[in-house]
Image (cartoon, rainbow, N blue to C red):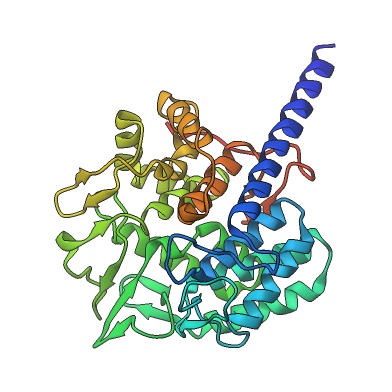
Length: 363
């Protein structure tokens, strides 16, 4: 009897949280996604669309089993941002939705291309649709062109095609490299295993005191350039989010949780992450960006800080001008609701397919 009661409670929790996740997706779609499949950031006067937003929407649609929107978002991206050499920024110069838009920056954003490749790989597996895998391989081939080897660090991926190599100095963005995505790439193609290892090393080396930087530079010998001048803020915050959503069976879960322990402990003390961290002296400033809490929620979900963050995030309705906030909430609350998780091979777990989700909070 007790066993049946436990299963009944488990099923009830799974389906109730899945319903909440569907509500989140519906809210995000109605707020930031057009009928054509364009994700709009209404806070910018050019009504911009980024490849980041498109890639995130593809992932959310996959989690929600919304194949129609998945295909619409992907088609809009390829038709407007480019297929062979995707650009990262598109917008409407006069800011009027009814008028034509155009590419505003032809450079790519590597993290977006990685999320698109990942979502295509997982769509092929989950929906049993091999045509998505073929397109994922096209994106992976382009990403391979951006892999570089930093001495004493390892293999890394440049954040974009242009502007991140200069006289032997390579610039990286730690938030561009979700370890679970690279883990999935490595399962698909062994080429990516040393890249995963190199990027984990780069993430740790670039945050010597446990706080991730927005950007980090390594010289030709692998030395971190001007670490005292680095800052962590709107980019870096995602680094903790990706690490916190790793499967506890992934060997990098405990490694990164321990390394980022100073930031996790700070959130437990202050209840919300700071807007900015000066990596030179580890001083914090600003606590007004409440969506940053979504990036630490998996780490503090069972603590007082987790309860406060959860309350803050659920009490504010999504609006079009809060595009980035909305995206962080989709990841943070979606994971908190158990709408999705990742296994030790980086594969996506969706409760409707897998009732057991292996998560835990670090000590």
